[in-house]
Length: 140
Image 1 (cartoon, rainbow, N blue to C red):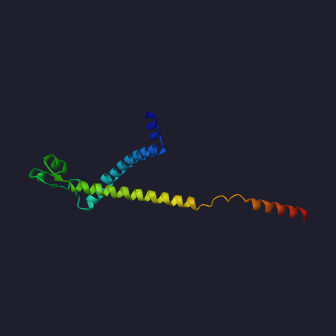
Image 2: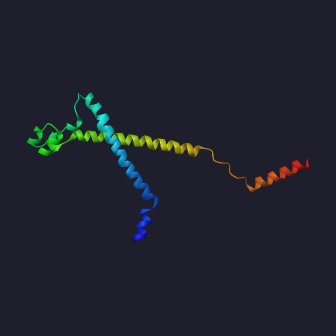
Image 3: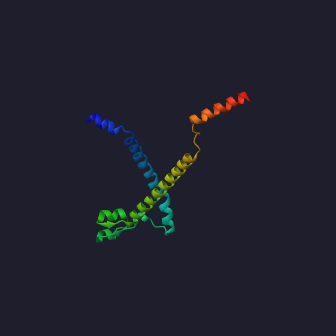
């Protein structure tokens, strides 16, 4: 059973998947920072200087009185729609970047496929005809 697991775990697909997941996590952190530290402050400034992370609806009286989302969560049940907006924008950016990457990869693959391949080797008939031609030239 150990040998079978080792064979499965060291297969190229599993290793490729592991590398993809690790890169995906790192890419997710980059995008999260892009959204939270660059895009959302600009959108918040355009929207009047408000921070989306503090947009919430308190579902209990104590949570409704809180001034920040973190304080509201500690005070009781809350709907944090500002955080949801941030995550939705984060997702849209990730999806768009992945779209651009896949689109570029598809274009590169089309260029490789469209590149002329080496001409096929001559057939037996072509070789024979070439020899006959060369013999006739030598006689003539």
